[in-house]
Length: 430
Ligand code: SF4
Image (cartoon, rainbow, N blue to C red; front, top):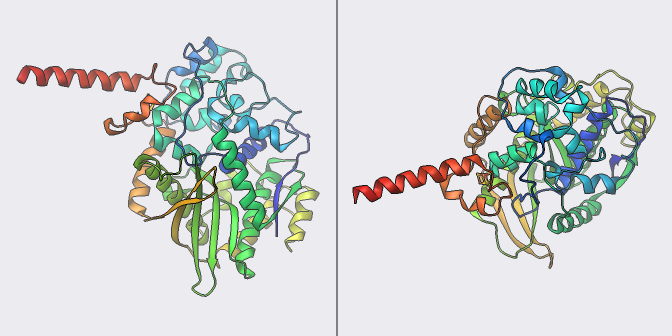
């Protein structure tokens, strides 16, 4: 079965900013977080004035509709997948000033878009991180990076860095792509609106669902979305692999992680991966249980469910035996079909050595709904601006050694001062 993928038409108006972000999400989900922990590339610690204005944390719960869509001025260079891929391999760490860099657009250039740095700064003071850094919804990778170190995530949005080619991720990309191509072909589809972009995602989900409904047993790169744990924040993700067992009527989720080293990951990495796959399971199960609302998605994404989809999208839908006019039709069909499936039974992570392509090991993840929900709700508070970013706990202080922000990190300074204080106190007691 075909997997619909993006082709590009360049009829890009302001709404295409969202389209570009969606594309970035798809590629980011595909190409990021393979095995080794997120490491920021070289940081410009002497951040220039354009970004220092953003270093002041902004914590507010107010919602601003304008802030939910990044403005993107470029309208000419989203022409091929490979260039887009390069620019988003390290999405939140790029310092490039080129408009072709999508994440740079989202994080650092609102001042010029809104008519001046001062005005932008004032605006920023009123926006939550969800509004400032993301177009009103989050990707699962945002949450997994947050799980590694929230403070690092925050700095990655607010301090410019130099994007560097990451050989680990490039090799992971190739391996993931090879596995994806083993289950389906990738075809290009012209997209002309945000609605088309989301229809592509829906068609890919539809393709996976139909695979199982028609006797297939493996689906790869399966989009999932929803608002888990009744938090009213849209989360979007891409599941590496689902395996259907028709005899037992079960579905297992498998996340693939390629690793530079041939050893199993550290406790912190495993914790991060566990959280990631648990969120995927939650999103998939919510779709199966009919908990995702079309209207919620439409209002979050600012899309028109009844807008007529492009010919290319409708043509590809017909190849999946679906006759549709709008996203509304398509979502009705998908939501109906996915509800005939079953929730995910087991969740596994497979670790593969990059060089040898040998499997290092499998890990079964025990899904703990309460634990995932508690952690998720804690993270959401940061995105809503209800609390400041936290750095790592003392037992994870080793992460700071390989963090590009360690020389400017306020959290680290604070913790180290606390430690010094404690040591002095202890010395006095002795
Ligand atoms: Fe997080 Fe440590 Fe980096 Fe600070 S130095 S951002 S606490 S990893």
